[in-house]
Every structure is written in structure tokens, then in C-alpha cells.
Image (cartoon, rainbow, N blue to C red; front, side):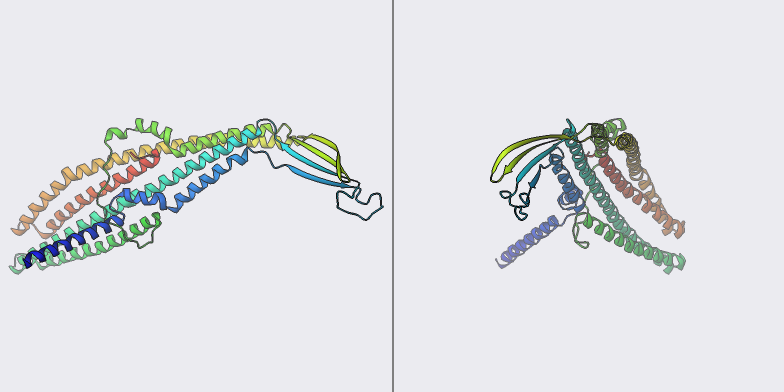
Length: 423
């Protein structure tokens, strides 16, 4: 009975410990890239600033198309009543007082153009926020892939270190029987030292990646991160056709949308500049006060005279040049984006093929070579240098495999950045 009670207590304690560990692992991000992106979407200050810039740009739309504030002009005439009194500012004690209220009104269509330009600028700000998020998400994905690569490389190095310990024991046993030189034992020890040095380097790189990732997540530099568990599956080759993705890029890439909005804004601004050839108006009403009563009403209508023609021609030539600039930048951005797309599609395809070649061909061949070299060394038919070279071939094959996996993830992240959406 006591044994059963103790067992139940042990089981409860184990379940509680497992629950706590699970909760902690859920609270600490980093096990997958999705958890990191979720935190960054709400916490990254760079993206948050871009969103607020977009909000500020939208708030400029309404004022851009609004009428300017009216003006009030107060005139006090004959403040001494022909010299019969001391000067005064009391409207009821002067000869007369005029209150003029004036409203400036732009030429027809100017307000609409200014509002449309502001709307295009706001749309550009919104797309800029999307560009910022795409850049942040790409850096997070790339950093996560590098953390995964470092982890797998660390595990591989530890495996090779354990293998080198076993090879050292084999060399010592052969040296004790006078079947091998002492140099074999020393070389095995040297290889172990190299492995330990590389583990230190990998640990330092991991800390750098963790610091970089925490900065993107707006977390303290030394905040804990979970061990990366998996990489996202790569899309099938049919989904990565350049012809298909090119159409998606032209339709959804935020950088191209920004350049398109800037071109439209430049064209609207050119149209607005040409409208400055026409005068703006102002209207007003002016009641006249005599002593304590208003006895006269005046109506004012005026306009500005666009005499500075050379200034306006310079502004018009400037607006024409800015349209040409916007068109050139749109074309340059399109060319660069499509070139980046083709480059990353090719890079992802190469990474996929490299991983398949390393997994299906190079790694099995290297393992067979090592097994043959190990058996030959134990029988005295192969020297220790050949055995070490066979071991290095296994390590190179596995490193190529995990490096290709990480490279594929980085290329996928770049393609998604260019597309402006997830695949």
C-alpha cells in the first residue's frame, strides 16, 4: 500500500514537472518560425513606426482638400473723432468700424488634386509599412534558418567528437599492440581539439544569432529562446515557376505598388502645377459699424494675378521632370525585383538539388567509405590518415545537407519578401 502511495505521489510530481516544462517551452519562443513572426508583428519597433507613419499619412488626406481658414480684418477709422477726443480702440466711440471676413477659394479642381495626391502618398506609406514588415519577416526567417543550421552543425560536431574518441581508443589499442604508430593517437587527439574549438565557435555564433533575433522581437538581448525544432517545408517546384511568380510579383509586390503610386502622384502634381496658371479667388463680407449700430454691408470679390510666368514655367518643367523620374524609378524597381526573383528561384532550386544529392548519394557513399576505411585500419591495410579523410567526407556530406536546407529556407524567405505574401 505504501509503495502504491509513493508511486502515485511520484507520478503526480512527474506530471506536474512535465506540465511546467511544457508551459515554459510554450512561453519561450523560437521553436518554430511562426511563433517568432507572431511576436514581431506586434512588437517590432521598426514595423510599428512604419504603421504609425501610414496612419499619419492618412490623417493628411482631409486637410489637403479642405478650404483654408477664413480671415478676419478689423478696421477702426477716425479713432479721434476729428481730433475731438483722445485716441480710442472702442468701436462704439470711433468714427466707424469695419469687420471684414474673407475666405480664400482655390481654382476649380485644385482641392480635388491635392486630396488625390495626399491619398496616393498615404497609400505609398501603407505599402512602405508592408515593405518594412516583409524585410523584418525575411530577417527573422533567415536568422531562424541560421540558428537551425548552427544547432544541427553543433550536434554533428558533437557526434564527430564522440567518433574521434572511439577512433582514439582504437588507435591506442593498436599502438599498445605495436600495430600502429603513436602519431595516430596524437592525430586523433588533435582532431578532438579542433572539434572542441569549433564547438566554441558555433556556440558564439549561436549567441550572436540569438541576440540578433531578440533585437528583431524587441526583447532583451539575453532573453532565452527555444531550440529550433523544424524548418518549413519547401513548396513544390511547380509552385515556383518564374512565369507564375512573375505575374504575382507584378500584382502584389509592395515596392512596385509604391513606385506606381509615386508615378500617379507625380502626374497629379504636374496637373496641379499647370492649374497654377489660373488665379485663386477670395470672397468676403464687411459690415460697417457707426457708433453702436451696423448700417452698411459690403461684399468683396478678389483674385490673385498670376504675373510671375517665368516662375510658373520653371515649376511646370520641374513637374514634368519629376514624372520622368518616377517612370524611370518604376522601371528600374521592376527590373531589380524581377531579377531578384529569378536569382532566388534559381538559388532555391540549387539548394533543393544539393540537399537531395548530399542525402541520397554523397552521404551513403561517404558512410560506406568510412566503414571500409575503419575495417581496413583495424586490419592494418589502411593508414590512419585515410581513416581521418573518410571521416571528414562524412562530415562534409552532412554539412552540405544541413547547409542546403538552411539555404533553401533563406531563398524561400527572399521569394516571399519579393511576392509580398507567404507561399
